Image (tube, rainbow, N blue to C red):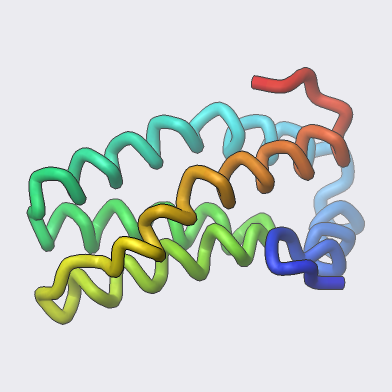
Length: 116
């Protein structure tokens, strides 16, 4: 199932394939997410298109690997704008933090982590 935030079918496949290892991977993703977001926001603030593209690409990859498709899609759109030499649309950038929070909440609930 895909609910705009997490593709739970993909997560179930990862759980089946990786067993308990998925918990460590999700834990690492969650611990790294705030830093990735800050680096992307810093790049956006400096309007450094190459850094925006790189940071957005990294976030897109790590999010999509865990089925966090909502966050991955926002990062993809930001990266695409940077690739085209254009600033990311404000409405897309404004969705980053709320989507990251929803993603964190859903993953924390699924894997019974304490909120970070």
